[in-house]
Length: 274
Image (cartoon, rainbow, N blue to C red; front, side, top):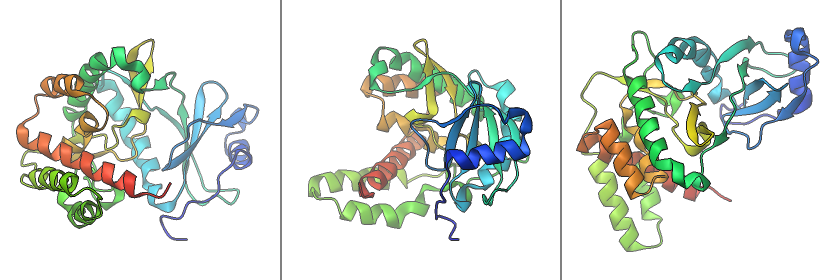
């Protein structure tokens, strides 16, 4: 099976896996989490846990990485993060390891939370700074396995220029080219720091009007933190973006690279078929 080919994962499969490997939880209800993810298929297990199963071979390495590193990072972070409880084995026709996590209450951030987003920008910056300050000894570097999050943005140069060339508006294409070339003008020349790798609205949970948790650390690595700042360009307005940047104290070169990451992801999303 090609590494990128997703396999069918449903409630019945999850019930079988839990019942055979974790019989103490066999009687708990199982239902899909909505909305569901791409790298993993996630299911509620009772009211306090979730089951997460990689959807394709290219995501399998995330299981062991999260089980090893998240308990080490959690005590040093100001917000809740995903907590692995148990690791499942291949079985019942499912070929890979999988995970059981604690369920974190909250809802994904969206524009309906507009009054709280300026504070969220500040709180997210504090979280990322704390993550960057965690010990990196023995940590995995960004590379192909996590789609180069924390790595060199230039790996996507050809792909990005091809997507820019396909844009309908020449003026917008020129702006995009300038953004991209500014992003490639610099490299991270300091010691590598921890990066979440997928700081996006679906992975930020709000509870009672405040940022309560950061989830889905499958792209976790060490390297250049610019990829974690792309949300500033993809979600925040000008005021929120300024709050975020000022809280992080980001230098101009890293900020330009973060905009490059945002451009690449925006173009990639737009290029996908509906």
